[in-house]
Image 1 (cartoon, one colour):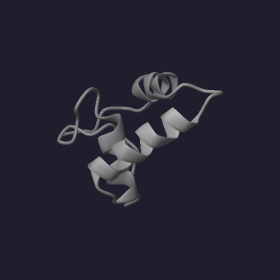
Image 2 (cartoon, helix red, strand yellow; image 1 turned 90 degrees about the vertical axis):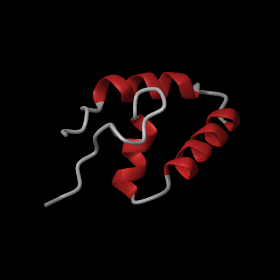
Image 3 (cartoon, rainbow, N blue to C red; image 1 turned 135 degrees about the vertical axis):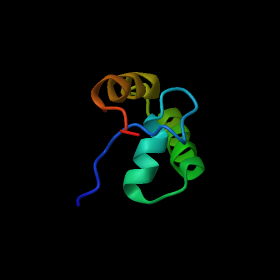
Image 4 (cartoon, one colour; image 1 turned 180 degrees about the vertical axis):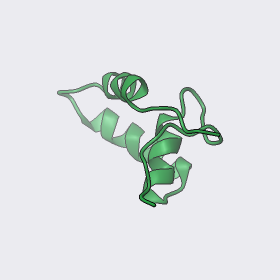
Length: 64
């Protein structure tokens, strides 16, 4: 069965977006969050909060 990109229920701080991406990639949630903060701070064109909000509404919640 293929891995689906869903928001995480067990690794969520705000909405589970970064935890879901970490589960999908097989990485540590801390590393994904740290990478997101670094990329968001380095990016001038697109603010990270905008990307996070879009992913929050587009990614389905993981099933229990």
